[in-house]
Amino acid sequence: MAANLDNGVILGALGSAFTNTTGAITPPPGMVIATVQCIGVTRFVTLIAEDPNKTFNTALPAHQDNDGSAVAGYEAQDHGDGGIKLVASGASAPTEFPAGMTLYGRWTSISIASQASAGSSGGSQGIIVYFGY
Image (cartoon, rainbow, N blue to C red; front, side, top):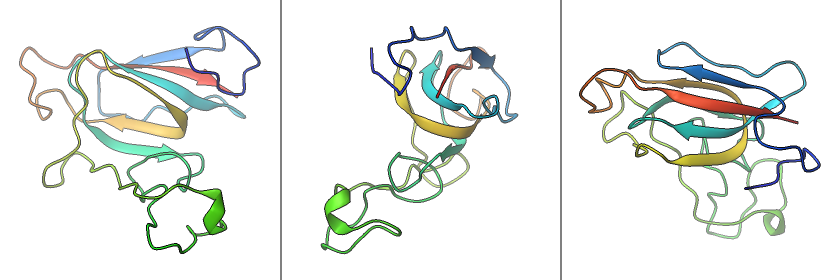
């Protein structure tokens, strides 16, 4: 299990939410979405990082510069290289995560595509998100 600034708090102890619809989930004030568990095949419409330069997201590529230049707001030595933007649902060739996949990071908002648009039969299965500090 990954640590996420919660000083050893067990995953789920700080709260969680479930959705199988396309509405956005946001964390309680002062918190972030620290973990996302994909119940079924999942495509994200929005996956907004607390710091989009550090955590993969649908807004911009985190750790994208591979030419030695700095990511916006950071010195070049403070980031990795080679990251790409997560392709949102509705775009050509969207990024798709398989059922059972768990994602770790620091996000402030998440919304998913309907499972029908994610290529799943049998209806929307959804995601579970866990909150952290």
